[in-house]
Image: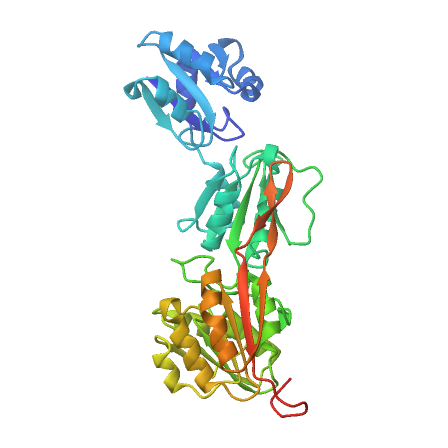
Length: 420
């Protein structure tokens, strides 16, 4: 058998007695060069043949040629079958010749150091990979995520850039773990404003642990980060992004008081942030997706605001239960968007404003005539934003989906009540 033994940084002296005995009885020991000095010091003159394993191909060729009854030990860091040499050995040698003995992996050590159970954790490797999968994984808002960094592509800074681009810096505790298992290991939590260590070791990984949301008083007044809002786990990232949300709130020209309809409210981000700006508004949020009402109310608690009502139902039928609006933001609608907009116009109060974010020019062509025929003052704008995302040697601009914004307003005489 070829015994493939996972080690910690203190090997071979810290190995269990059984594994040390296998080393003493071996005819060949293969180990990374960094272990050789410790092996020679431990084994002395009785140490068998020692071969480096840093270049797997020569090692595999030697193991393939060795006698089947020869006693061989291959030492590897942590768990040989977790991003270790185990996969390469299994690809090249008969599996019945290999026996694996895992040691603590870097993930086990990292979670042990921060004192957190990790049965619910997930992990992702950036070694030689574009960071796009990390951005997608972050949108799913995992409770704990270990990121195996690639120092050649930016390392921990690349992870930070992905967090920043996703608006999730405040949503996760950022733990930097260096040289795990070694005598000079370093584990520290970094705030978003903290610099990475000037002497950052290439041998590091990052733990991202979900944080409790900040208190409402700690949130900015305007332009909340996307990460503040809870999202549907099966529809990660499907919400009005911060850049578009800011524009829509400005276009709504929110009054001091009155009724705001948020139709197709999603996670409630637009209407709830409107309440932070105008606490005396009555927000009525409508979303047809089941389970949305509880999510929107939970997001309201996070922001310290309370809607007048949150309904699950299909528009325009569900609008009958709502008071007439002063402001309307109308998302969704699908094929019924024309009928929905007409129902909104039939109920919109004098001086009211309706704002409709759209994804297609066809929808714009369909809805704009309704506003014009109703006598509203109409404006159209297109908004495109980009967010910085890490690239191998710098930052690229990753585009968000462009949004067309159709706005209609009932003009009123200056000085009339109800306008901001």
